[in-house]
Length: 616
Image (cartoon, rainbow, N blue to C red; front, side, top):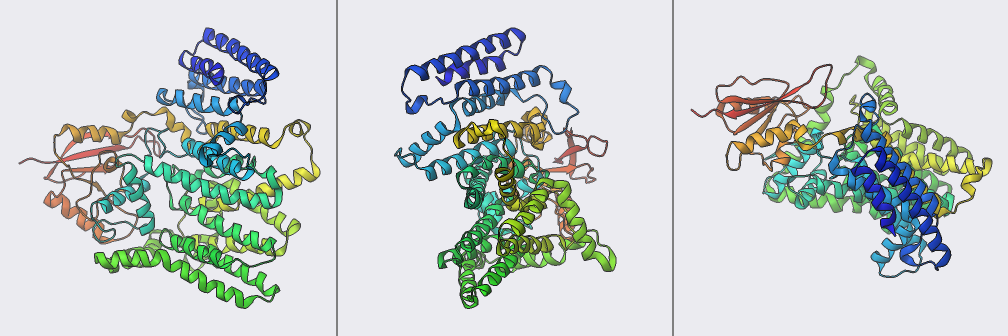
């Protein structure tokens, strides 16, 4: 029966003209009528559980009309940065099928089928259905939001490629910091090693890891919301995903903040859950808090302020119950948990002979050199940095800020002072540690998405007690959940900043053009250096491994970077050099080609210049 709706939907996309639209409308109407009559004359069956056929067919028609209009009139949207231009043909069929299935069969049916496949039984367990729905939401929304997914031709953000190149190098026996340079934490680099194991020359592996990370973030966020709202919290899961992953701070996907979101969300859930029970975390939870905080320590320790606020909130809660000694024991168990990832990292670098490089780069240089590249403001530097940090949050993640403020007001008025302390103190401590140094990258506020659930709880709580929308009261939770996911998928197309990249195919990116030029050279196992700039992605798509420590430039005032890269140019240590918006003056290298970027930067069209080692 799905094909009754799927075929006209795909027909509308494959032949976008007026006649096709009329035929598709007639086919939709016929399909809706057929399913309705089937439901009236047949008892419900697991594979034909269409509860709202006319509504779902109308939603599918609306989505099809949107694609049709965008296909036929894509030039109208070229100036709208919040909307994509015409979706590339390679993904239209996939997008149509996914949206069609979501709208047609009802999310409640899809949940039951997935749960049955996972568990092997069909016992209508709400918990299993909820978990399956969260997994479905994570997979669908991350596929649309992250440029690491196969939905996009290429992720052209430099940070993920730099980490991915180091991750690939680990697979070939190189040691981070000593053999190949990076500033990020070793555990974050190992995540990219895992991604490279799945796919060596694409970000498919990182996309899968992003789905896993998003799942656990949504899973613990849902548990937080369910403690106050019950089963009515499930439709909020897609809305939470839409808010967090359409923010500018999400950037293009694959950041340390993104992978740390589930870690701190778990800690918030543990504290909230136990406070509601008027109890402290049990031993296993203390240890897991230690493990997760230890993971953050070795991914990006600038966000560890969260755990300081968390422990303070737990301590003041325990003091009211005369359980301060239990908190001290819990801190001891946290220390045990922290040692689990810490010992593994230390053993690895000790056996490899790179322990001093680990501490020099990851701790000393990040702490004492990295802030020197920021704009400081004299004696009032820290104060102005913190004020600028709040502006950074407002610009790059405004909905999280609004949710946080609403959530704090709600916690202080509707919940209890313990929860209010938990939310406010964890936020303040993490905020101070992130922004005091004067760095304000767009992806920093992504981590504050962990506080969005409290804003959603507050909104629903106020709605349920003061507002009634009759049309929403007509549907059960399953239908509201289906409508929520379908609406948020549509919202992802409309509001996700990455969607404008769907207009580009691989050949539109300079990186793929540079890859083609490198392959045309006929050099076996070519080597490449990204001169004075971060890894621009050619190493990833061409499967190139670095043959020197500073295979690209970094945002550090470190003389070694420039000196070693210039020494490489002087000695001709690599086959190719890629430069961004600059030329290279070296007798050892000859310009192969200039590749213009597919975007404007400060009113100009930047270029990627590819140089090849001169054959004397």
